[in-house]
Image 1 (cartoon, protein in one colour):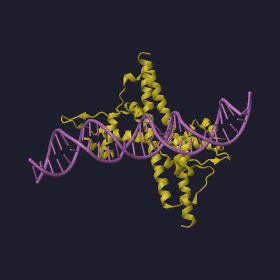
Image 2 (cartoon, chains in turn yellow, green, orange, blue):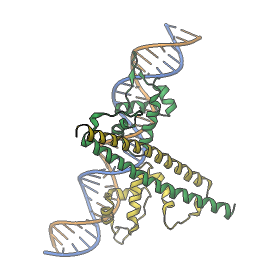
Image 3 (cartoon, each protein chain N blue to C red):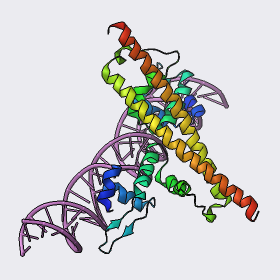
Image 4 (tube, helix red, strand yellow):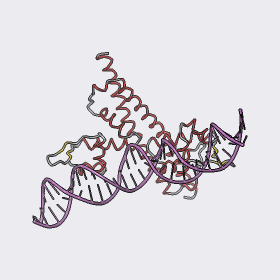
Length: 125
Length: 125
DNA sequence: TCGGACCATCGCGTCGATGTGATGGAACTG
DNA sequence: CAGTTCCATCACATCGACGCGATGGTCCGA
């Protein structure tokens, strides 16, 4: 697929697909005429990037953790350094912190919404 | 407490505390000399704001959902509009989506890390 | 062969969240 | 009184994610 065909199912502007490539998040093949060439796996990859970007981590971090997300799992032996282990631990913990923060607040929002909604129904509906 | 005393325990630059106030996220009292005055509840409030900002929602949204997070729960009757109910539902769902995305990816990172770590120990430790 | 649809690169603009520094006032302290 | 430290406001800079337009190339069908 070409960039337009990847843009459509992912709801991602072409501009951003090129940006993600510039940031090293995705690597596209090139056709003879210079056009970027993608296969279907890029759809999920791009959606994953967008989801993560919306949930906190910047591209710099996402680039580091993307290799962890391949299925089937491919181990990059260069990752077996103490630095990389530390990075993975740090980012894992940051993500956990975000999850907990979001969960707390989402539950509060949901609870509040329920109360307001019930008041509406019983008060002057 | 004054702005410096709120800045320290929250790890938040004074600049940002003023910024959050400008965005309507917090409202400080003013002393006779013009200094902002906070009480202890602002510590948690600021930490909550920072956590949310780091996890996706922009200040505009955070401002809307902050009133939902007060304990004990205070219902703002102006919130009983269909628009507000819709907003709360939308943001709740967005937060849920972020939680799911982060959880999936965090688990992948954690799993990858474990494998790399074990390889290290058994390979050439 | 020409017009349109796609692609390329490049550069500038925007927007939200921050950093940084200039300038000045109030309060404490030597 | 001078110096230090806190505070105030205000303006400008930065940075990452993204929007948008200019310009030009390839390919395809009328």
